[in-house]
Image (tube, rainbow, N blue to C red; front, side):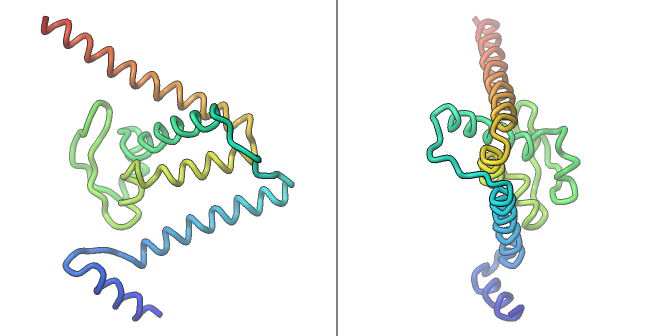
Length: 163
Protein backbone atom coordinates (compact mmCIF):
# COMPACT_ATOMS: atom_id res chain seq x y z
CA UNK A 1 0.00 0.00 0.00
CA UNK A 2 2.84 2.41 0.84
CA UNK A 3 4.43 1.74 -2.54
CA UNK A 4 1.19 2.56 -4.38
CA UNK A 5 0.82 5.79 -2.40
CA UNK A 6 4.44 6.79 -3.07
CA UNK A 7 4.02 6.10 -6.80
CA UNK A 8 0.78 8.10 -6.91
CA UNK A 9 2.40 10.96 -4.99
CA UNK A 10 5.36 11.11 -7.40
CA UNK A 11 3.09 10.95 -10.47
CA UNK A 12 0.75 13.60 -9.09
CA UNK A 13 3.35 16.03 -7.77
CA UNK A 14 5.82 15.93 -10.62
CA UNK A 15 8.53 18.43 -9.69
CA UNK A 16 6.49 19.76 -6.77
CA UNK A 17 6.37 18.47 -3.20
CA UNK A 18 2.76 17.36 -2.77
CA UNK A 19 2.60 15.12 0.31
CA UNK A 20 -0.54 13.17 -0.57
CA UNK A 21 0.02 10.67 2.24
CA UNK A 22 0.07 13.44 4.82
CA UNK A 23 -2.96 15.07 3.22
CA UNK A 24 -4.74 11.72 3.45
CA UNK A 25 -3.82 11.64 7.15
CA UNK A 26 -5.32 15.11 7.65
CA UNK A 27 -8.47 14.03 5.80
CA UNK A 28 -8.62 10.94 8.03
CA UNK A 29 -8.27 13.10 11.14
CA UNK A 30 -11.08 15.35 9.91
CA UNK A 31 -13.32 12.36 9.19
CA UNK A 32 -12.45 10.84 12.57
CA UNK A 33 -13.28 14.10 14.32
CA UNK A 34 -16.67 14.26 12.58
CA UNK A 35 -17.31 10.59 13.47
CA UNK A 36 -16.46 11.19 17.15
CA UNK A 37 -18.67 14.30 17.27
CA UNK A 38 -21.50 12.33 15.66
CA UNK A 39 -21.07 9.48 18.13
CA UNK A 40 -21.05 11.87 21.09
CA UNK A 41 -24.22 13.53 19.76
CA UNK A 42 -25.90 10.15 19.35
CA UNK A 43 -24.89 9.02 22.86
CA UNK A 44 -26.17 12.30 24.29
CA UNK A 45 -29.38 11.83 22.31
CA UNK A 46 -28.85 15.15 20.54
CA UNK A 47 -30.46 15.64 17.18
CA UNK A 48 -29.32 17.67 14.22
CA UNK A 49 -31.52 20.77 13.84
CA UNK A 50 -34.19 20.58 11.16
CA UNK A 51 -32.96 23.91 9.79
CA UNK A 52 -30.33 26.53 10.50
CA UNK A 53 -31.77 29.98 11.09
CA UNK A 54 -30.39 33.07 9.40
CA UNK A 55 -28.94 34.42 12.67
CA UNK A 56 -27.19 31.12 13.39
CA UNK A 57 -25.77 31.10 9.86
CA UNK A 58 -24.53 34.70 10.18
CA UNK A 59 -22.94 33.98 13.57
CA UNK A 60 -21.37 30.81 12.21
CA UNK A 61 -19.97 32.62 9.15
CA UNK A 62 -18.53 35.57 11.07
CA UNK A 63 -17.20 33.35 13.86
CA UNK A 64 -15.62 30.95 11.35
CA UNK A 65 -13.95 33.87 9.57
CA UNK A 66 -12.56 35.38 12.78
CA UNK A 67 -11.43 32.16 14.46
CA UNK A 68 -9.81 30.90 11.24
CA UNK A 69 -7.82 34.13 10.83
CA UNK A 70 -6.99 34.19 14.55
CA UNK A 71 -5.57 30.66 14.41
CA UNK A 72 -3.79 31.09 11.06
CA UNK A 73 -2.48 34.66 11.16
CA UNK A 74 -2.48 36.18 14.65
CA UNK A 75 0.95 36.83 16.20
CA UNK A 76 -0.26 35.59 19.60
CA UNK A 77 -1.17 32.17 18.19
CA UNK A 78 2.19 31.78 16.41
CA UNK A 79 3.52 29.40 19.10
CA UNK A 80 0.85 26.91 17.99
CA UNK A 81 1.99 27.21 14.37
CA UNK A 82 5.75 27.53 14.97
CA UNK A 83 6.56 23.78 14.82
CA UNK A 84 4.90 23.62 11.39
CA UNK A 85 5.71 27.02 9.83
CA UNK A 86 8.54 29.49 9.30
CA UNK A 87 8.08 33.19 10.10
CA UNK A 88 8.50 35.46 7.07
CA UNK A 89 7.24 38.84 8.31
CA UNK A 90 4.08 40.86 8.72
CA UNK A 91 1.27 40.45 6.21
CA UNK A 92 -1.29 42.98 7.35
CA UNK A 93 -2.57 44.79 10.42
CA UNK A 94 -1.82 42.52 13.39
CA UNK A 95 -1.14 39.54 11.14
CA UNK A 96 1.97 37.55 10.31
CA UNK A 97 3.07 35.81 7.13
CA UNK A 98 4.45 32.31 7.59
CA UNK A 99 5.66 29.69 5.14
CA UNK A 100 4.25 26.24 5.83
CA UNK A 101 6.59 23.37 6.62
CA UNK A 102 4.74 20.25 5.57
CA UNK A 103 1.09 19.34 5.25
CA UNK A 104 0.11 20.36 8.79
CA UNK A 105 1.78 23.73 8.20
CA UNK A 106 -0.28 24.19 5.05
CA UNK A 107 -3.44 23.53 7.04
CA UNK A 108 -2.78 25.73 10.07
CA UNK A 109 -1.23 28.70 8.25
CA UNK A 110 -4.17 28.99 5.85
CA UNK A 111 -7.38 30.62 7.13
CA UNK A 112 -9.27 29.23 4.13
CA UNK A 113 -8.13 25.70 5.00
CA UNK A 114 -8.92 26.08 8.70
CA UNK A 115 -12.39 27.47 8.00
CA UNK A 116 -13.80 24.01 7.25
CA UNK A 117 -12.55 22.69 10.59
CA UNK A 118 -13.81 25.72 12.51
CA UNK A 119 -17.24 25.64 10.84
CA UNK A 120 -17.51 21.92 11.52
CA UNK A 121 -16.66 22.51 15.18
CA UNK A 122 -19.26 25.26 15.33
CA UNK A 123 -21.87 22.97 13.75
CA UNK A 124 -21.05 20.26 16.30
CA UNK A 125 -21.37 22.87 19.02
CA UNK A 126 -24.84 23.83 17.81
CA UNK A 127 -25.87 20.20 18.26
CA UNK A 128 -24.06 19.48 21.54
CA UNK A 129 -24.12 22.82 23.36
CA UNK A 130 -26.15 25.38 21.41
CA UNK A 131 -26.28 28.13 24.04
CA UNK A 132 -22.53 28.12 24.70
CA UNK A 133 -21.81 27.87 20.98
CA UNK A 134 -24.00 30.87 20.20
CA UNK A 135 -22.23 32.83 22.97
CA UNK A 136 -18.82 31.99 21.48
CA UNK A 137 -20.18 32.83 18.03
CA UNK A 138 -21.51 36.19 19.21
CA UNK A 139 -18.23 36.97 20.97
CA UNK A 140 -16.09 36.18 17.93
CA UNK A 141 -18.53 38.04 15.67
CA UNK A 142 -18.19 41.10 17.92
CA UNK A 143 -14.39 40.80 17.66
CA UNK A 144 -14.61 40.52 13.85
CA UNK A 145 -16.87 43.58 13.64
CA UNK A 146 -14.51 45.44 15.98
CA UNK A 147 -11.59 44.55 13.68
CA UNK A 148 -13.46 45.97 10.68
CA UNK A 149 -14.32 49.12 12.63
CA UNK A 150 -10.66 49.51 13.68
CA UNK A 151 -9.56 49.23 10.06
CA UNK A 152 -12.24 51.70 8.92
CA UNK A 153 -11.28 54.14 11.69
CA UNK A 154 -7.61 53.93 10.71
CA UNK A 155 -8.47 54.54 7.06
CA UNK A 156 -10.67 57.53 7.96
CA UNK A 157 -7.91 59.01 10.16
CA UNK A 158 -5.35 58.63 7.36
CA UNK A 159 -7.69 60.24 4.83
CA UNK A 160 -8.40 63.11 7.25
CA UNK A 161 -4.64 63.68 7.69
CA UNK A 162 -4.13 63.71 3.92
CA UNK A 163 -6.81 66.39 3.45
